[in-house]
Each structure stands twice: as C-alpha cells, then as structure tokens.
Picture (cartoon, rainbow, N blue to C red):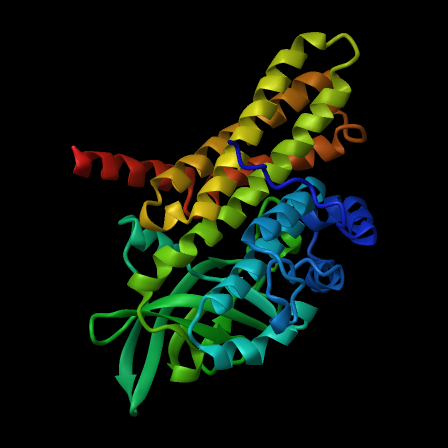
Length: 364
C-alpha cells in the first residue's frame, strides 16, 4: 500500500501566500525585504508546524513541516530556503539532549525574533566522506575556543541569529554547538552576491577563538547524532524541489492548452515521477529507514532535482516565446534561476553522486 504524499496544506495562511506571491520577484532579486521575511513566515505559523504543542508549536511531524515548506516553495524559493534553514535549526533543538538550550531559544525561534541557521552542511558532507571539518576547537582557559570559517550560511538575519555547526574537538571527538550573532570572535560577512535568492540573509561566518560552553552544546557526539537528524535535514531540502516542481508543472499544464497538447504526456509523466518520489520520501521518513542507510535518501534528492529541471524545461516549452519577454516571462525567469540553485544546495548533486559511487565501490 502506497503511503500518501504530503499534499499542499489547506490551512496555509492566505495572507502569507498572497504576500509571498506578490513579493517573489523582490525576494529573489533584492535584499530590502530580508528583515521582513522570517517574521512574515513566523506570523503565519509556518516554523511551528511539526513542533510539539508542549514547546509552543502546532503539533504534527516532520512530514507536515516538509509539506508546508513545499507549499512555500510554490510561491518563492527564497522564502522556502529561509524556512528550510530556520526549521532545520529548530529540528536540531528538538532532537538535542540539551533541554535548557531548547527551552531558552524556542519561543524566539517560533515568533521569528531569532533566526535559526544550519551550518551543518560541512558536517553532513564530512559524514559522507566528502570533505574535512572546517571548525576546530582547542582547550582555552578551562574551556574551549573555536576557530574556522563557514563560507555559506543562510538565514543569518542581522538582528539576531543562532547557527548550528559541527566542531572537531581537541580530544579527537566531534561535537555540534550553537553560535550566536553576538559571540565574541564571531564575524558575519556582508551578504554574498548571489544571482538570486537575495533576501535570504546568506553570508559567511569567520570564527576566531570563539568561546563555547556546555550550555551551547547541541550534541556532544556528532558522529552518533548526525545520522539521526540527517533525514530531516535532507528531507526538508527535498521540500524545496517538491514545491518548485509542482508549480512549474502546473504552469506548464496551464500554458500547454493552446496548440501545445503534445506536451500533455511528458507533463503527466513528470508529475507521476514527482509524486512517486514524494511518496517514497514520506514512507522512508515514517519508517526511519534513512537513519541506518542514507543512500535511498540521497537518491530521492537527486531524482527530485531531475524532476525540477524537467518541469522548468516543460514550462519553457509550454510558454514558448512568451517566456523570453520581460513582462510575461518574469515569473518563469525567476523559477529558472531557482531551479539552477537546486543542484548546488549542499550537499550538491555532484557530491551526493560521488558519495553514492564511493559507497558502491566499497560494497563491491
């Protein structure tokens, strides 16, 4: 029996949806709305989905969080990308043994006054054998001091943020800690000059002798903890592809009615593959099978990215010359830029394919 895919939530706040649709172009091309984006998402209750009611959330599971993130991506990938970083950080706290940190930060995370960011892409790649760790800690004055650089982190809202990152400890172990915007020795660069997604507060972080104490430790054993949270990390990433592909396929379906009926079959085929991959993601997350073996999760992320590329291509073919006109083609041009970002979200498709190839070689 097939597990139902996460559908577009019927209670997605209409005011938020309208604002995202109206501002999608500005969110992609300008930085002016960056301070407003997370509070808007929080006002609509989106970060609270999948968070237990006892912690101030609206209940549900990570499947529900993926569904609402996918719906946000149908309107604006910039908004969905910010929601991904924020909701992923919240998930880290939900799965952390550090109850004090969770209770201290959760109210501000849910109301959007504090931004949560995930700097664990490096750790996820390290876990898959792709690259070395970028942050290291040394004993300093009875505690620990952290050095290193995070070259690309999203949702570093200047007003206030916390970012989760994995650190190589002085004892050969690896831990996950939360760093704050006002920590001594932590420097946020200006926003990166992206070709799109400009309102996502994406920047680099430099750490020089940043002190870290036990109150900021999300997990003392990263190598044991990371495989448990990786399905949520990558699963929420998959929500970006699900929403963008759904929107592009819907636009292609609407535009293909005038003299382009030949596209009906490939649009239907791509839609079926999208829903099959979404069903498989839901089933794997429910069964927790991705914790023991992440290969199936990596394959789904790759498959969904392929569907996004095909969906945007089909939208282009359905629109024809209108897609190249500045006015009628503006939304398509944005989705085309958004689709170009899907393969390079870390871990990138090349990195995932390399990890899968290495795994197959080891098995052989």
